[in-house]
Length: 191
Ligand code: SF4
Ligand code: SF4
Image 1 (tube, rainbow, N blue to C red):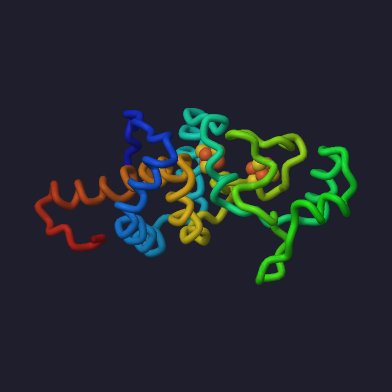
Image 2: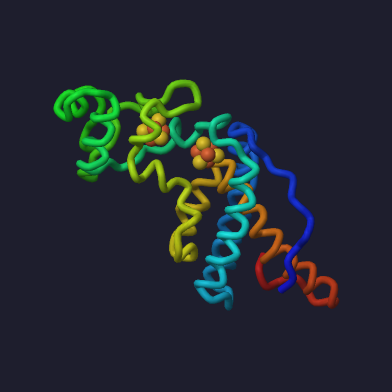
């Protein structure tokens, strides 16, 4: 399957991204079904996702966004808490008392949302931030095909995920439709 050379225009405003992702939510779930049923090897899809991710992440400024810190709640480990408390120059007991609760699933999370350690769009403990925050939006990981539900949901929150998903649809799905239509076949397979 050929790679498209042209660079897509990116949407970087979180409010616009949320609106567009809501409008395209049905389409995104259909694309998820397409990927689940596609013949692509797991590693092959991962390589395509990583290529899109590197391109999009290099063109979107997280410091001008900060939306994940407002919309997504990271799960915290004891190590995360120790690291953040150290970064703030306070003890872990004080940190837990001020910032942390156990949620209904038994996970340790921040007491408040948006994250109480965010200031403007920035993280006040950036060098000491939790592993979950470092890892977001998780597109550098392997086994993308098993994390598609999370990816569709994150399209609503994260401009990087939204644009990667749009790029994947363009490369893997819409081109398929073009090929079918170009051959005069009825376009029934993926829609
Ligand atoms: S700890 Fe920092 S990076 Fe993590 S959610 Fe809070 S502000 Fe964002
Ligand atoms: S990871 Fe996504 S949501 Fe978070 S700041 Fe960067 S672009 Fe925004």
